[in-house]
Image 1 (cartoon, rainbow, N blue to C red):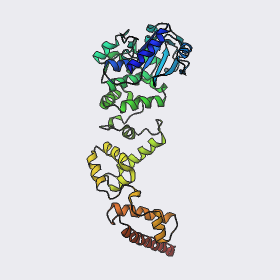
Image 2 (tube, one colour):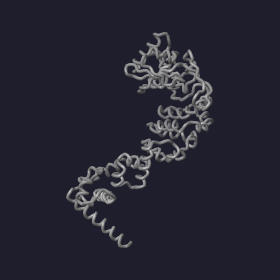
Image 3 (cartoon, rainbow, N blue to C red):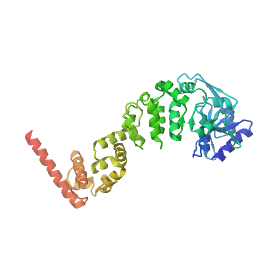
Length: 376
């Protein structure tokens, strides 16, 4: 992939401009980590890039960003720029195209993300980012307090990079976070959740949790229950424990999953009926939260005579035809009783036995209805 990117740089440079690969790809390349996201910075304007690459499209005209596809690979190319007047502590009000790389580097967040590769594959490091990679340090470009005040998202990005890369924050960065963390109220909940998801999904989760708590970010982010998150690998499980359904933006599916996980936990100890009702994934997350291993769950699952309704050897047509009834509440009640009885091993999943069983169930159902009618 790097070879393809270098060809893109050469095309730009052959037309009289300069261009560099910059950002996370270079960092990961130096750390020998896999990365597929390549960003290119250049002194060519979006208009000039559109002339060089016929398939180019502008992704953000304000920031001078252009997307191109070259050899079926997507590249984001941005014009060198200087940013001014961060009114909402996230986005600059003014963007001015720059003509040299040094000016563009100054506006970036961390030294480890500001190392460049030129068209010949040579490394250009204007802010000693490679030294910070070797020292495993997260350091801002310029004054950390100013950097976080300009773009408050950088606070969470600092924690995220420290977590995912297993780096440490410099003393200056830690102190700046403590001084500016109150500004996180200006950051949208969507962006907070996006960064937190990356922290929560890290293999180095515990470090991320410790940083969020030690820096007091748990309170600023409304995550007062963060200390209850222990040994949970599934991100949805972490959000379930945090109980911030009404605070953070979740999809309908995420909300439903969290609801079912909590209901499964209430069924502790889990049984075959719980696993049947909520499925393996929900129950595995519930068990993780409860501190129980998957072997417990698999023992239950393997001993279940059925795992879903379609495993049952009769269908609704068989029930309707056998009992001469119509679809409605009675049919739903009979199905619930069938599932419960098979799971409890009161009856085998055998067509003949099940047809006899449902006649008995239906008979008792009608008896109770008659008794209720008589009393009324």
